[in-house]
Structure formats: C-alpha cells, structure tokens
Image: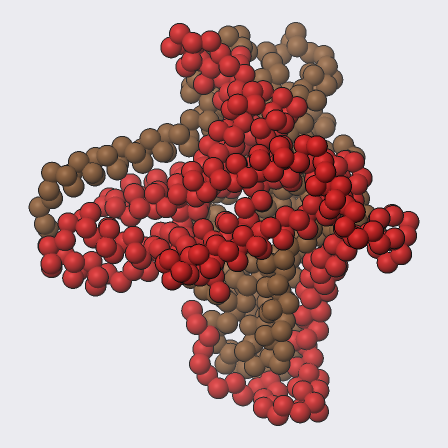
Length: 293
Length: 319
C-alpha cells in the first residue's frame, strides 16, 4: 500500500537525508585529513596545502615509524596485552558464566548479586592502585591484564547466551561419561560461537585501546603500550627524540606533523581492519545487552 | 532467548532446603562450584578489596603500615579538600561540563536514532550506521590525534578554512575558552552513533500494529512520530538520563586528561584530573580517596533525587 506523501513529508525526507550525509562527512573528514597528511609530501603538508587528498605521494613518514625501535616495542607490548589478555578474559568469562547459567544451581542468586554489585559500586582509583602496587605488578605488563581479567557486563551477556542452550545436550554428554569441564570445552563452547566471537572482540578492542591502566601502573618507557606512546608523541615529548634518533632528515622527506599523522594511522588501522567483523557481531551483542537483563 | 522451561532433572535435583541437602548438592555438582572459584576470587580481590580500601579516606594512610595499622583521622582529608583554594574552580568546571554533556551530548544519539528510523532506504541506513558506529571503537588517544591534527595551527584543516575565509589562525587546543566546546564536540563525534543503538532498539520494540492503526486513522508521519515513536522511546530515554545524572561528576577522565594542558586548566581541570595529579603523581593517597568518596556520595544523592523527580513526572524510575 503506497500512500501519497504530502509536500511537508517529502521536504522532511530531503532534509533528513542531507543531515545524515552531513553527519557522515563530519565523521569521515578527520580520518581522511590525517590519512592525507601522512601520505603527502612534507613541503605541501607544512605549507597547509593538504586537506582531504594527499598532495604527491610520500611513504617516508611510514618508513620512519617502522624503523623506530621505540614504536615497535610499544606495538608488541600492545599486541601481547591484547592476545594474552583476551585469552585470559575468555577463559574466565566462559568458565564463570557456565555454572551461573544453570537455573538449578544453589546459590546462583547471591553469586549474581555479588557480581552486579561491582557494576554499581566501582573500585576506586587509589585503593586499586595500592593493590596493584602491593601485588608487585607496578611497571609490569601484567598490571595491564590482571586487574581487568573479567568484565561483569560481558559475563552477564555470556550467562544470558548460555541460558538459551538446551540442557538436554549437556545431559546427553554427561550420560556418555563426559565430565563437566569437558562439557564446557567440547559442547557449550562450540555451540556458543556467536557470543564467544562477540565477547572476544569486545575484550580485544578494549585492550588495544586501553591507556588508562598504563597511565596508572606503568612509568617504564620500555613497556609502554602503543596508545601511551602515541599520546607522548602528540604531546611532543617524543617527536624530536624520534627525529634525532634517525638524524636523517636529509635523506627522508619527513616532518614532525607527518610522523604524527603516520603514527595515528598505524594505531588506527588494526581497528579499521577488524571493524567489519566487529560490526556484524557487536551490534548483535549490544542488542542482546539492551534487551535482556 | 529466554531460559528453556524444562524441568531440571540432573545434576543433583534436590529440593530439600536443609543443610545436608545443600551439602549433598554441592558435592554432587562440585565441578560447577570449582569453575566459579577463579571468577569469584577475581571480583573479591580486584573489586571488593579496593572498595573496602576506601577506608583510607578516614586515615592518615602510611604505605608501610597498610590500611589496618594506619592512624584514624576522621574527616581531616575532607576538611582539607573543602578548604582547597581552587576547589570552586574544580567544582564549577566539573558541573558545567557535565551540564553541557546532558544538554548537548545526551540528546544527540536520540536525534540520530529518530532520523535513522525515518529513513526508508534500508541500504542507505546501513551505510550511515556503519560510518557513525566506527568512532566508538577508536581509542581516546587516537581521537585526540585526529582533533590535534585537525586543529593544528600549521597544517590543520580548520585553520586552513579560517584563513581561506580571511580570518587568522587560532591555536584552539591552547585556549581555555575553547576547551569545553572541544570536549563536547569530540564526545559527540565519538559516541553519538554507538549510543543511538539503544534508542534504535527501543524504537524497534514498538509494536507495528500501533503504526498500522494510526495509518488507518489517517495520522501523518509527524503525528505517528509524536504519538507513537516518541512515547515508545521515553522509558529508555528516562533510564539513561537518570544513569547520567547519577554520574554527574564522572565526565570521562580518559578523554579530558588527554586534552588538558597548562593553558586550559582554568576551564578544564575537573575533580578526576585533579585527583589523578595529586593521587598517582603526588602520592596523596588518603586525600585522593576522600575526593573519590565525595564524588560517589554526591552521585548517589543526585540519583535518588532525580529518580524521585522522574517518578513523579513521567512515572519512569530506576527502582
């Protein structure tokens, strides 16, 4: 059934589409501007000739980033935290979530309340800092992993998903003599791929992006994650260091601004690459989260 | 995706409430309880210990004595905090930025969700969604990098435009008067799309039969929006608004810390950034914890008041 639109409604549609196109432009302009700056010739960049498209084509800023040992150290710290952290996150989330999804479990309610309480009353900064200090984790990569080993919100998403799996399947496995740990690993886990992928991506992105923990717990430049390295580079504590370390301004077509642009892009690219996967799974996850509990 | 409504038979179907029955249940299902141990230990150590550690706000905390043996000083740190000469500036900055967040940042995703919902072309809608969700996944450091580049005096897009229009370039990030605007706009830029998801979910939860009936009665699209879509979104809007009011003093340390510099302290220094400076960098553990406690109490108070007001006016409430 097609109803003829009034003039006002047509006008609104045009206005709506224009406004949304404008919103998209506002989102994309900063990304394109930095990308263009990172690929432009230095002369064009510092004379303000670059807007959204590279002027000339120059990869020297990237070469400089990739030749910088400090960058690589920070990059590998972040990769390590993301891989190890996410693995620990997933193990804890799945094994804690599984028993709590059993409605027959005695004490399930108090356990759930115990968890939800921590979402309302969050751990304060200084006592958390002192705890990490007492545990001897200051200036260790584990300080970036252990204090965030389990996220209550993700755990609840996991419990909600497990609750939807039919208990008969687990029962059949138990009859076949499988113990409960193998039931989790070989039955529950493979059946829960949608939530496993969603949560793994949630955790991985938060590890990749995390700079707050490093700001609190890390002062040693050798184990500074990428985000903190990037911040220091932008706040210019380090740009000149990097440039002098290279002492090659003559052979390369580089500038502090170009170097900053290139580093921003390098830190952004992994996120942009996994974004299509994230988008497919995250939206589902966010929906589950908002509809349930 | 609700829980299956089957009768649970095993493992250990015991409806006895006596202690022996409970014990038998635990023994028979010990695997399930053993699985819970690491997770529960995590919450105990990393969430409950620090919460209990808040008592150092009432102590003269000494690193060597720990919080069991440190001397109790009552409200000394709160008094010291309230007599801090720049306290008024901190509170003013915190409240003003928070107020701007409620007025500008909060409605942006609601508006976006409404506009997206009114789109008829599903493919265009998906493209827009893909683009506006993206910034949520970028870290604040990267967003800071974008803003920094965009506003750069020498190479930045914004200053190009100003100069092209005949103005002279401005070092926006070093000017106190632009700080709040930059915080609010970059906040909207990053989270507007992602926050819209909740509201889109609320809209998609509205029964289509309501729209059918309205069409039968000849309601225009605007009327349908006003009398169906908007009321359908109200519960979600109110709940999120109440949560935001409960966090009135939490503005997002991660964002503000990055943008803050000595030139912008006068308009941008907030409770959290001050607490970080004197706590982590300055080592004043007790004083900083007292500030955190003050924030929590104010947040809780605001939440209770706002919840009551909301219940009286719209009938929606958190509890």
